[in-house]
Picture 1 (cartoon, one colour):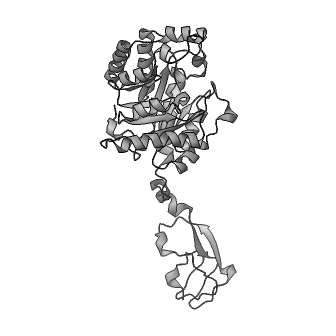
Picture 2 (picture 1 turned 90 degrees about the vertical axis):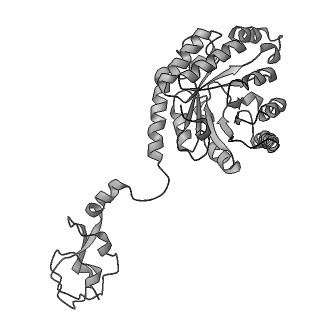
Picture 3 (picture 1 turned 45 degrees about the vertical axis):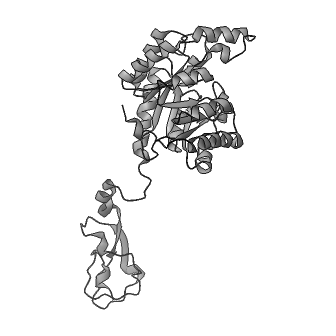
Length: 343
């Protein structure tokens, strides 16, 4: 497991990949453990859940939703078990608190937090979690730049009063539709967030079907990727299973992100080592089309630019204006014309 201190430094080229288990365990500790085990096999960096007390989260008048949440609820003791289980497998564990009491509990068992899109304007929760003085991820679904900036200010103002730690504010581009349609993904918002909030890391919480959006987000600079995860898309009628990646898809996503990281490189425009080997083969050199005797004034028809097998160092050949120059020596047909041999 990568050291926590280096996870969100901003200098790391490695994308932090989160398997969002959420409530796909449907209240079963056994299933939750199985999900964590499968996520580990897929190669993710972290697993994430949701922690809530239904009475502090939704109205009891919404009976269908309330009863579903009661069914899906895991106890604090069970989350403590899951946290240790994940860590023993070498995974980072965290859960999104959906009420203040759950947030206080989670502060005892996890090193960083996430605020859900539905709560990016739930300022008492943001204030409370900010006071924990830990790295904080805020999902930006349902929000415009104004709302995002207000949440950001609350966090940064709270942190000013705290003893400085190795913490980071991470903003996750997100579209809160389940699933999000391709034409709504709006991935270019990642670049917008990077420009407007330069002190933050930017990530992407993916609700689209498939892996194209998440991979594209990495290419656009997202440093944290979160993807819903399930054992089986047809596990039950619970909505989240359908939009989640199954183990096969998650494994492919992780492999493709790691491959993409290599392809993205450093961003510095320079010759690659393989290009240096090909340089002499692919660059054109000026070659005499006929014998050019000493003091011959060179005309257009006297030269051609071709690739040659010569191992002569390219630094000896300059792309100067050869026309109307005079030769210092005899240059014979098919010989390379060097700048040092021209007047």
